[in-house]
Length: 194
Image (cartoon, rainbow, N blue to C red; front, side):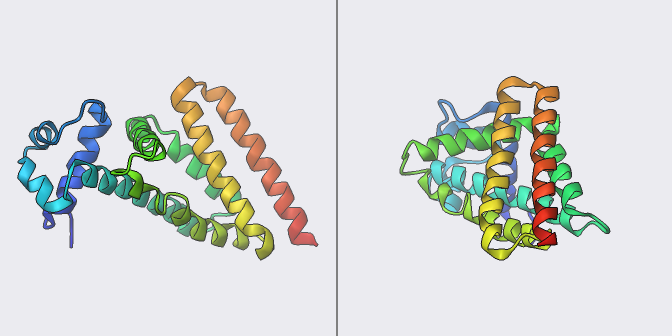
């Protein structure tokens, strides 16, 4: 069902844009409902609470990024280096910055043991591991090493994204990312030869 025909999905879409612009500080259910052009009762009906909506927002944002990775992987002739660099460029697109800030804001709330948003942690790492393990294994990494490399790729991607949001130092981040990609590619080539 498309978002246009599914009211819950449409609300999540609008909430993502609204929260990316306004953040979650001092957020009330009624204020959020007004910003989305709906009622607080409709939000409760679809999400159970304001925090239920925030969890749905975080999951949809993760789904979008996983879809971006899948699209890069499926591009004709794309090799591991092109996919990694493409995902790096995607995550450092200035148009994505408000959404990345929102992701880290929600992630931080959940990490503070905020019981209402804690459910967003379910899958925030694990949902990435399977596609990344497949990607790393396809690059020639032995299966017994692929899980560690997949987790490392995720950690570096998120770390670079957070650094970018904090510093905006594109040149330094590009150099660090390229050093990581080059080193990883070399190690993968070495592993593939053995």
